[in-house]
Amino acid sequence: MTMSDAPDGSDFSLVCDDCGLIAGLLRAHLRSWELAWQQFSRYGWVGDPRAAGPHRCPRCLQRTATSVAGGDVGAVTSSGSGRT
Image (cartoon, rainbow, N blue to C red; front, side):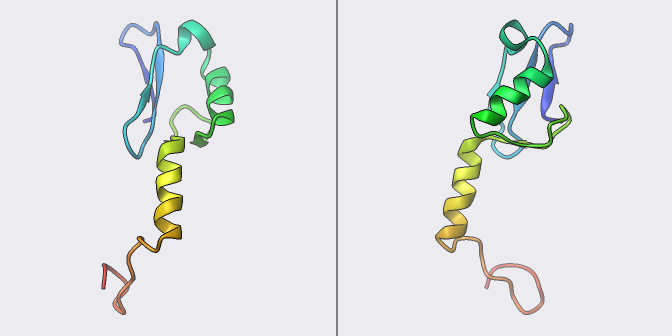
């Protein structure tokens, strides 16, 4: 789950499924999940537009892109798993 409701339902947060970054206290400014997701996706968050996610923050996307470009993804062995 990547959208977290306050126990009393008065607020919600967006949580990155990779690093756990939390963008909280969203209801006061953005009122609804749909509006919040629309705004966050404009600023680089990616994922399923539904509240259940998954969602990833721009920092994790950049880290993944840098790792792939730098060859840090690990080679697959002939058995199909693990680093060589």
